[in-house]
Length: 325
Image (cartoon, rainbow, N blue to C red; front, side, top):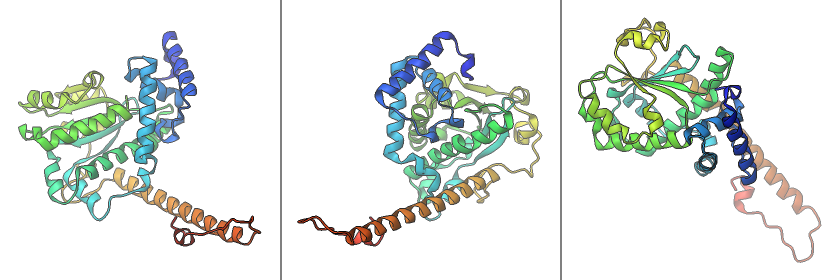
């Protein structure tokens, strides 16, 4: 939403939030501002807290603290050890279809195929899975949104989720699934508010009412209002072009245009591009770390050559000398 579209009362709330942020010395990092647009980000936090300024400010502060505590800004330069990344992708089928009619990216997942218990049995942990989901969201905000904005010619700061529940049964209500869904939902709603523009559920089975009841306890009212059950291709084509919709949902996307990870280890282009981003940023971070370490060593050597005040001893730790401190 453009700030020009705000009501006068909403503009007042936005300014009050800015004033309160200044008083509390809150400075959101660039990585949490889609398109670098502070106003649009603050509006999302205000909407998430029903335009209550103090509550929105608290939510913003909690997000900043959470990001600092977990080192979220570094997630796009990190990967899980060993083959854990590949394991998670084999047990979770998802990817990006393209953009909807408003320019928003469409995230597509086959919910019934996701096998968290299989993932755990293969050596991954729930913490590994959580890390990947957070990193995927960071990639969405810092790379997919800007690309979508460039295509649309205006700011894009939300996305669509399309969940295919073909073959789903009551097994989805297992303890592991509920635990993970609850944890991930809390993260998204608390630290990435109002980024999901809509959640579309397709191929809902007969037991979907029970499944939805089990999962909805983890959704706030605002999230629940964004859920829509689609029953035919016409429901989807009012939102996105049929050419990006898979044939299994009634669309015209070619079967050869694969867009989902699968149990055979296939990785679609969207995640390959993310892997390339991670490799580049990891290399940049390593170069920066080495440069900082070299400067630290040079500083120690330089200071050891300077006249020292009486009674002061300059001691270089073995870690600093090795460039690891």
